[in-house]
Length: 290
Image (cartoon, rainbow, N blue to C red):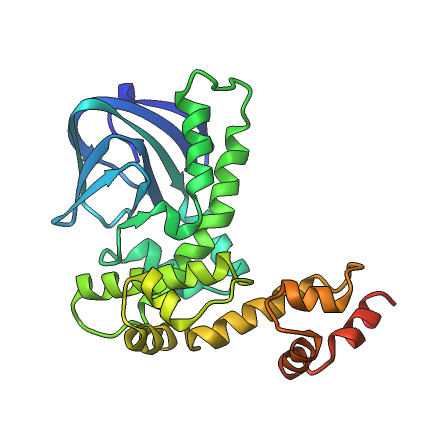
């Protein structure tokens, strides 16, 4: 994103169109030019954007996503300065990331359509620590002038771009014709998914998961399966089993691994593991250590 140059400090830029900037502004109004995919994070204060006729208040902990098809205006007019981080990813780089995940169709939608969701919560994509570290690095008195800005940018892209592509894929699976309703529905379901992703060992019950996500058990069960292809308990089971499989090359006792993965005992773990992968965990451990 490229507001007027005096408002931004360029931290990194290459010839492909990838760039990282930080901005500090109290009053500004103007157009934003986008090429490829642009992300705008606000760490403090608020920046107001109008994207294709829709208004978005980007405040601390949120980020805006835009592509070149979106007519984007920004206005900042607050008592305090708005502190932000702008990240531009070239279309070629996004496509390369998509190819690695076999999500080329999702990249096409993300880059070349103008109707998808624009505003996201950083917490919904596990970016709280990244955003806090970036704020400290660029705006606090503890800022380190020797930071590797390119590494910061690529680390963000490697984490976030696959998630945004997944969002595009799942957005297509949500029902209804109203854009705002579909976005709101997916955001709630996405929150439930993030909880399962972040705490797979937790003894989740449908009631508690629905309460955390802010919806009824019935709607969570129905919508989660529609969007992700599995009901929450089966999604969680697969998360636990794949995590446990990744740990088999270690020396931890299988009984301990079963408990850590969220199973009641080794027998329950072994039964579910063999059903999922076709081999017992003990056999796969022998093969991996051969």
